[in-house]
Structures are given as structure tokens and as C-alpha cells.
Length: 268
Image (cartoon, rainbow, N blue to C red; front, side, top):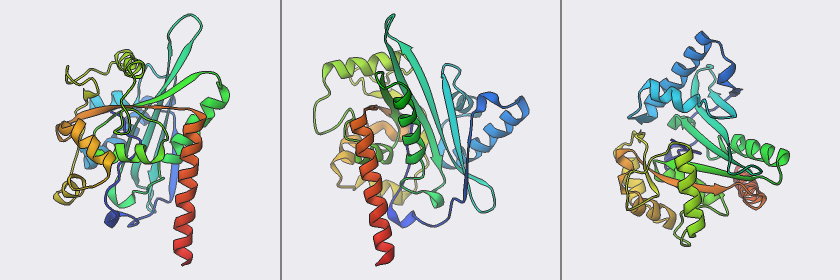
């Protein structure tokens, strides 16, 4: 299950502070530290999602096929973990000469600590790092999004992504997405809709959250709800974002613009 960020209505924002974060590569943790590390994250996971046991969760966080894994843990004033963002890099050799890089991610942040860019900067830095070291290589992010907020976050911050209400997904892009999903062991949930995959992660919603998203008038949110009505049962929307310099520049512009607006509101 991949999620770049889960955020909810504005009434929940800015309640508590994230005062510290640390980045960990779980592969290098010794057995006991790795066990404590997973249990710490799983405690957060169970407050946000249902439908996944600790063994399945461990396989998401520590992916043996990934060539690089980084997990960022967010902590509050009391040094208690309140959120995490795990990002994984896979390299798939399509032929003797060409390598395609694929990023996947999982994230969870307790409601009181959610910020629009709490996880964005971490992912942005990882993407830029890889693009700088491999400028000629094709790089993608592929997610299986289980909540409209995740899709809305990607849609607002990316210049190009698929699927989208703005245009039909080109056949070659759809074929690429299906090939990636097959290589990564992501199975379709519906034969008639290749974009829908079975994930099993279900966001714990209260009535206010459900009402907010079901009545949201954003066209991208309406598109998500139309194409993936089974998200409440753990079905995910297969979503592709090409990691190009154009997309990264777009993310940077959106990010800095919102930061400037926020600072101007504080001054006002």
C-alpha cells in the first residue's frame, strides 16, 4: 500500500507539533531493534488503518526486493512516535541495457500532527537525489491509493499523473502501469478495471471525515470516488507519477508558494 500523505479537513490541522524526525534504514537494524522499530510503527498504523496484521505490515516496511529503503519517523515534544513515511526504491531491468527505477511508499501520521508538507519534503529529496545520480534513467512513483485524500494530495502537487479526469490514460502508459504492478506483485482486484487493486488497508474514518470527502466538490476527488468506490473496503487506485524534472519543478513551485502564503497570513 502506498500512500504519499493522508490529510483531512482544515479543522483538524495545526493542533500539535512535530518537534523531531529521524531517518532509518531498517535493513541495518539488529533483530531486537528491528522488532521494536516495527512495533513502534505498527502502533501508529493501527490508529490510522485497519485490515493489516503485523506480519503483513512488516513486509510493507521492510521490502527485500528494494535496492534502497528509508523510513522517516516523526516525534512530538515527548519523543513519542506520531507518524512515519517509508519510501522504497526498486530497479527493474527491462532489457540488457535499460533500467527503470520505481519508487513506492507507505505513510501514516496521527491526525493531530498532520501537515500538508510533513512528508512531501522527504519524498522530494529522495526523488531529486536519484535523478541527480541517474539523469538519463526513467523514474516513476507508483502507488495503490486507498483514500481520496492521498489522490488529492498527489493531484494538487504533480503536473503529470495517471489516471486523471483531465485526459484518457494513453495505452502505452496503461501497459507500463500493468507491467510495473505485475513485476512488483500488485494484483488487480477487478478484471474490468485495471486501475483497481486489492490492498486491504482501510482508513479509520469517522462520520465527519466520510461526509467531508463524499460531499467534496473537487473534480479530482469526485474522479477518485467514481473510479474507486470500493476504497472503504480496502481497494486501492493504481496511480503512476513520472518522476521528471518538470514534475519535480512543479512540486517545488507549489510547495514554496503555499509556504509563502502561510507566512504572509501569519504576518497579516
